[in-house]
Image 1 (cartoon, rainbow, N blue to C red):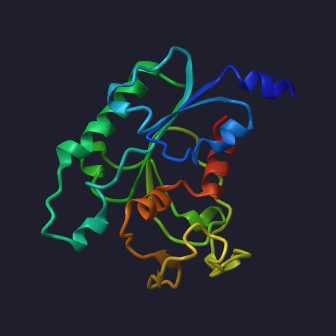
Image 2: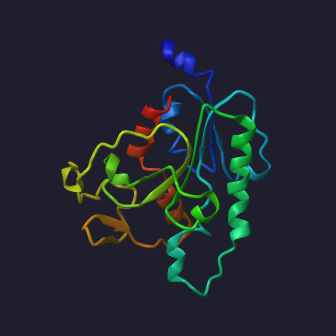
Length: 206
């Protein structure tokens, strides 16, 4: 209880956070989590408060995703894509938090942000699918739980995942990977931070 009360004074900004999946462990532990996401808030014109403790940023990956390579006729708009990225970085530098992390699926964003500090797969933390994700920032690396996919108790069992109604493909290594989504709701689900990673990140950065 005492730690919960202490956490109430620590502001966590969840930028472009969608459902708030990444910041949920902080909210559950009593942190002052502020979800800055559309349609209520636009990160581009958001003015942050003083005393921010941590920043979690997940700007849209639409213009940077390697999945876009499947549609070469659709031009990428990097200026549009970088607008929320730049806004997140502005907020980070203005608030100077104790820790911060900006995530995007491994793709073209590294052209502007350089090499990622950390790259992970959801299955490393118990969520049984593949989605290679990059993080930039200043943070402690979460403790990886699994080094071998087949060691997961729920390996290949996708019945309880948020993607249960989607078709899956297996990579060359046999690990399930989600197929391309076709509507905004499916894209939103695909963008959610895996619960296992969110918990591990929280445990490493409090």
